[in-house]
Image (cartoon, rainbow over all chains, first blue to last red):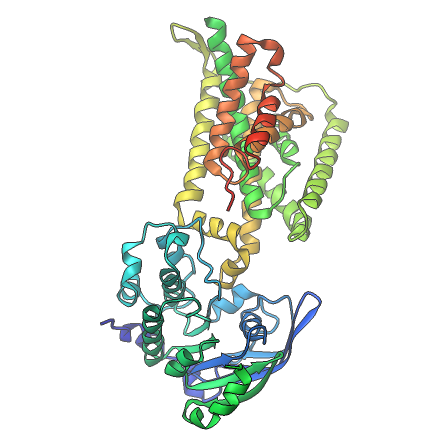
Length: 251
Length: 287
């Protein structure tokens, strides 16, 4: 299997040593034009954790990720990443601090072939995966290198969207609904990948509606509702919180 | 027959200018979403820049081929940073009005100082004279313009369609927000892209100086046809604008030989036909 050790060993994670959260979001409010979407979001992500934001459609999960990434026009509050306040930083600066984003719509470029899509995100720090390591995680990509990006199947596009941000050396990944609309066997493959990345020391902030999938990879959960975090618990407390969770998610 | 070949050559030369200009327009439109009506004025500035270089600084044609596009390109980048930048996200119409206004101002300033008549710009010594090809007489400078323009067009195509930098550019054309969220400085890329498009226009201006003389309104006359070329070719495609540029030049030339009365309107007739059949243009991408 893939030896990601070389990748993770190269970047001694300065964040994990300090004990402070890698990402700390306080009183985050955000607007799309006139509409006020987030009304004070508070949560932390520690180094090496997989944290999942759960919630219904339109609760504000995606907006939260986009606010961290700096691609929401108006946002207030405090977002600290790796000790730096990034609430006012532009998204290219935020990316260069080591945050990589895989959007819900995957963002595969139609005018680029698969290889160009893979190579598009610039390397922001040393220690990213090599192309060979990415191909070992997602063998399908290797066979489709010269295809147009959007000619891939949904599952392959998702692999491409995740694969290309692993090259950059960013150790903090934000994945927005990576399993949406995919076949169970592909969901499983993505689950394995996330588990593997976690083992290699990546920190992952996941947005999911598929709670069953989230339960296989997450360390902690936050529940988002009406633009606020209304609850949070660790994976170990999952069974005890099952009833509440069903009410929150309406499943 | 001599006359036919001569018209074909004129067509190819006009086609070279159409191609260089519509290529720049396509690149700018793709990245900035702006229909750059100032393109003709910037083309004129390229020719004037070569004229000033020669008559003030004594810098000749060959250095001017490089210096003028850079100088005018920098002027374009200043326009982008100070004015066009503020139009991002707005309707096409704003960009069109702003660049049209800029074109009028630039042309007005040059007319104020240089009138409307042409200033001569000599063909460089190396390219003077002509060759007898047997079936026609080929002025060397005109042959040079066609071949050099073609090379520049193909290099631009290669840069955009086949290099990493070009991939960034294409991606940013599709989804600038995401490209920026990957850590690429998209605003800087937009400025440089505008500079590239403007530089191509200025280069066409330098090439045209020895043929068409240097006049404040030289771009205003040309740009109307170039916009028709762009409409016919479709805004989305780089290769499309190159091929359409050369092809329409040739078609115009042929029309001049076979039916001279229509030579000034043939491009517009074609534009109407294309718009009726395929409104996105011959090579326009619909996605």
